[in-house]
Every structure is written in C-alpha cells, then in structure tokens.
Length: 395
Image: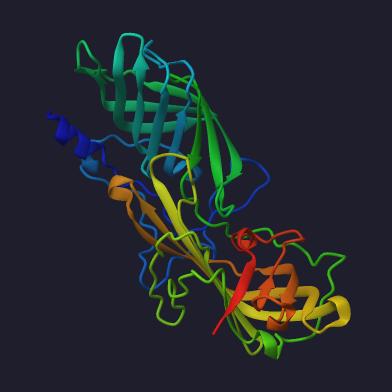
C-alpha cells in the first residue's frame, strides 16, 4: 500500500461521545452513565460526535474497551540527554519522542510512536511506528492487536519502511485523575508499561462529570444578602487588551481571540445576575501534538457581603461573594489532530462557587477593578476563573 494511502487510513476520527456524562467515582476506573451533565447543545459548535466514525472502519476489526478509554491519549517527551528507543536506536543531544493513541467506542485504535534526534552516526534520525487494529482491555492489560503496522526509518545510511506484521502490543495500564496545566480542566492520565518505552499518556478531552463534586458553603464564608452593587453593574474585562467579543451568549456565536499577551475574559453584572466567560488556548500545553482550546461560560445570581472598607476611604472594599450558576457551558476546539479537528459544544452542570472579592473604585488611585481570589474550596470549573481572577472596568 502506498505510504500516503496508509497515512490516510491511519487518520482516524476517534473522539469520545458526550451523549452521556462521566459518572464520578472514588476510584480511577470511573464508569460512564447517561446523565444531564454531558449533552452538547451549543449553537455554533457541533456536539461531540459518537466515537465510532472512522475512514474504512469496516475494514478494521473491533475490540472491547470501557468508555473511559475512548478518546485521544498522548504524550510528548524531549530532553537533552541520552535516549534509547524501543528498537535499540541511541539518540543524544535532541532526543525525545511523541506518542498518540486514539481509541473509539468500537474498540478500534490508532497508535503512533515517533522518535527523533541525533545519533552517534547521523545528524538526523527518526523512527515512526504506526498501527491500526483492535483494542481490548482485560483487567489492567490493554492489548492492541494490529491489523496493519509499519515502521518508517529515516537515517543517514538506509531510509526504509518495515512491515511489522501483527504481533500484539501488550500494555499494563493504570488510570489516575489529572488536570490540564492551563485552566485546570479535569482529565485522566494513563501510565502504560510493557511497550517500547514506559508511557505517561494524558486524555485530551474528557466528557464532563454527570455529578461533579459540589463544595459545601465554607464555615468561614459569610453569605451576604446584597445583590451586585450599583457600582458593579456593567462589564469588567481581564485587561485593557482583552477581546471581549469572543463569545455572545445571546446568539452562541464565538471565536478564539488572537494571543496578544492579555487574558481574554470578561465579567458582567446586570441587576441580580452575573455572567463570566474565559477563553483559553493550548490548555494541554506541552501534552502531545493534538491541541485543546476552550471557552468557558456561566451565568446565574450573585450575592455579596462587604466585610471591610479598607482604610475607611470608601474606595477599597473586601468581602465575600457567592456565584450560584443556573447555566454553564464549554466550547472545546481540538486542532492539529487530523480528522479529529473541530469545535464541540458541551453543556455543563451548573454549580455554586464561593469567592473572596476585592473591589477598587477609580478613586483608589488606579483603574476601577474587581478581583476574585479563590480562597475557598473550588467547584468543578472554578479554576478557569481562578487562573485570571482580576477584572478591570470597560464601559
């Protein structure tokens, strides 16, 4: 089969469906149950597709894996030290590797392991091991049974492709809860041993929990009765350079702002209600070649309690505020991931969040602004707001 044709076969559209949300359990083997947390109904963004669609799926065997394994798992590792890949090739100086494992709900998989660097005998060496086939989990042993497997080698002496046949790839795995480095979005990590090298894979996008943990009102939190004050009415943004048009909650229209050094977030008060939206890019940062961007939005009712008029000047206030959401959603964009690229709208379970607030009027000597330090236990998606929790007035 020509290399390009085989590459197209390997471009599998395998993504976790959200027809049912992930049920939270105490153990790493969290199951999936249908629930209210995972419907996908955002205008302007497609719902997460059923993970069964892939090119030429009828030509591939099916396997059997639990729902928590469905999706895009990946790892990228690089170092300046020595490294030996699974084929006995030694690298140094720019050694490292990238791995992606895609599995769908039919137990069909794509596994790719790419390693490159400088060897003692060649300035540019790469090994690219790819396979497609059936994935089966028994206990903690994940078996990848290739229907096709090929190794592409680029080096100074003998560039070549090798058919590796159908010998199974047997991995002993363990799942753990994890969080993406930017924004703190919950996901899973998978440690896998038994392959060419030990792997520590991260799931790119996990379906939302059907019953996310809801923190109780903290004992040291003062629940006020004040609605958002007249001084707070209107819009605050993350910085003067913020693009505040990235999401329109009325129409559902959205875009991901250009990166310009400013946080892209906004906070609005209208009567008793609040709205908050955050746009983050490269949420998974260095974790793999497939990238994840998200827009988070929630709205609900806010209550405030002023605990201190700092200095008694009437321009610097500290207190507590409760945000009780009644609608929340996330738009996830997957990119640099071949046929899995796309925008996915995900309805979330609304939650209640507790904050300390600091408010400075324009008379305080700087810009009018409000800060929301996260000094209390956080709700499931509160980390989005806690990452950039200062907002300045924009009329």
